[in-house]
Amino acid sequence: MLNLQKHWWQETTVYQVYPRSFKDSNGDGVGDLKGIISKLDYLQNLGIGAIWLSPVYRSPNDDNGYDISDYQNIMQEFGTMADMDELIDQAKKRNIRIVMDLVVNHTSDEHKWFIESKKSKDNPYRDYYIWRDPKNGGVPNDLQSTFSGPAWQFDEKTGQYYLHLFSKKQPDLNWENEKVRQAVYKMMNFWIDKGIGGFRMDVIDLIGKQPDKLITGNGPKLHDYLQEMNKETFGDKDMLTVGETWGATPEIAKLYSDPKRHELSMVFQFEQVGLDQQPGKDKWDLRPLQVGELKKVLARWQTELDDQGWNSLFWNNHDLPRIISRWGNDKKYRVESGKMFAILLHMLKGTPYIYQGEEIGMTNKPIKDFSEISDIESRNMYLQRIDEGYKKEDIIKSINTKGRDNARTPIQWDETEHAGFTTGTPWLGVNPNYKSINVKDALADKNSLFYTYKKLIQLRKDNPIMIWGDFRLLDTPDEIFAFEREYQDEKWLIVNNFSNNKHKLQLADINVGETIIQNYDHKITDVSDLELKPWESFAVKVVD
Image 1 (cartoon, one colour):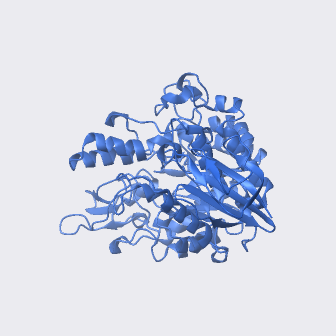
Image 2 (cartoon, rainbow, N blue to C red):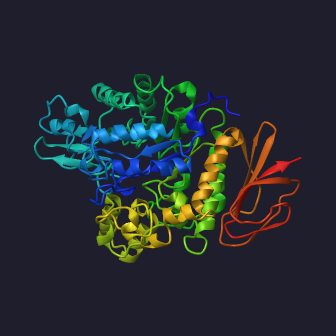
Image 3 (cartoon, rainbow, N blue to C red):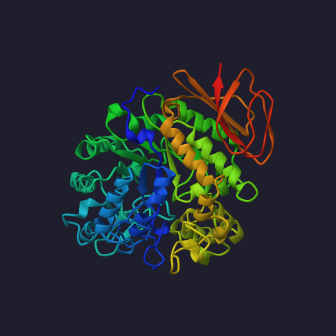
C-alpha cells in the first residue's frame, strides 16, 4: 500500500467536460455553463466526484479556448461569472468539485499583457514574453511549433521575434520573469477563493523552457517553479492538481507527484498514446497498436511510481480520438470493447478520468474533405503535408484516425435533431450515429455502457483494493491483458481480451470466487481453461 496521506482525489473519479460540445442552453450552437448546470443531475447519477472543466475563460478562440485573453472573465459564448459561480455552487451541492483548466505556458496575443509587450522594447510588459533578435536575417533558431512551422513570429514594429510553441496567436509566457509568476499565482488564488477543487495544468512541463538552448520540456527550473507555485497557491489546501506532461517518464513523474516534494497531485503521462505511431515520426504517421507493448507500458507505470507518486488513468480527452474507434471495434463490438476499456482502466491503480461521451460509447466522426476540419492542428498539418506532396487520401486517413475533432463532436443526448445538444446549428457537426448512440437510450438500457461505468465508479467507492491494491501483470498471450490487484487479505483477478478474436485463457493455480463485474453474461468458475469471447472482460475475486 502507498505510504501516502489519503486524499479525496485518490478515491474519486473525474469527468472531463469540454464546454463547447457538452450542452447548449440558448440555441446559439455552442455549449455553455448553464448547459452544464442543467446536466449536473446526470453526472451525479453517474457517480463522479469532480469535473475537469476545459477552459471557459475569455478567449478569441483560435485554439478553442486554450488561447486566453482574460483569466478572470468568462468567454461570452459560455455565459457570465455569475453562471460560473452557480456551477461551482450547484456542483458542490451534489458533492462534485470543479477542477479548472490552467493554461499558463502561453496566453492569447489579445491578452492585455501581450498587447503592452508588443508596443516597444522598453515596455514594462516586454519581458512577460520571450522576444529575440533575428539571426542572419531570419528566425532566432530552429524551434518548431506543435501546430506546424517555426515557433517564432516576426513583429514588424519592434523588429524582433516572439516565441509561440503553439499557434502564433498563443505567445509563450516568460516564466523566468518573477512578475509573470506572481501574476499567475494571484490569478490562481482568485479561483481558489471561489471554491474550486483544483487545477488541470495545460502543457505545464513547458514552463521551464530555455529556447536559446532548444530546451522546451522538462527545463532545469521547471520543478523550482512548481514548488514555488505550490507554496504560493494550493499547497496548504487539499486540491487536485494534475499536470499535462507529454514528456514524462516514471522517474520524472515521481518528481512531480512525490508528496515530499510539494509539487502536484499527479500528472497525465502519454507514453501509451504514442504506441500507434511510427517510431521517431509524427502522431499522424500510423501503425497498428501492439497490445503487448501497451501492457508493458501500463504495467511499468503501475509499478514504478511505487510509494512515491500517484497515477492518472485515461483513454480519452479533448486532444485524443475516441478509444473505441482507435483501439477497439466501433462497429460489431462497440459495446463489448467499450466495456472492456472501462473495466481495464478502472481496475488499474490511480485516479480514473472519463471524457464526456465515453460513458455512452461515442465514436470518431470520419470526414472526407478539408472543408470539414475545424481543429487548427489538423488544418495546419493538412496544408503542410499537401505542400510536401502527401496524397490527400492518406492525410484524411490520418485525421480520421488521430484528429482532435473526433473527440469534440457534441454530446449525443437523445435522438432528436442535433442529438439534443442544441436547438440551433451546432458549432461542429454532430456524429450521424446519434440516433442509435445517445444518453437517453443508454439510461433506458440496464445493460448499456453507462451502467458499466456507473458500477465501476461505485465499486471504487466501496472497495479500497481498487485504490490501494498492489498491481501484478500476469504472463499471458499478447492480446490477453490479465493482472491481479492485492490489498491486505483480498485479491482480485482482472482479465481482458483485447481483440476481435476468441482466445484461450489458461491461468493455473488460481481459484475463482465471486464475479465482481463482467461484460458478457455467463458464470466464470474456472480460469485454467476458459475460452474468452471477443473483447471479453471481467474482474473476479481470487479465493484460497
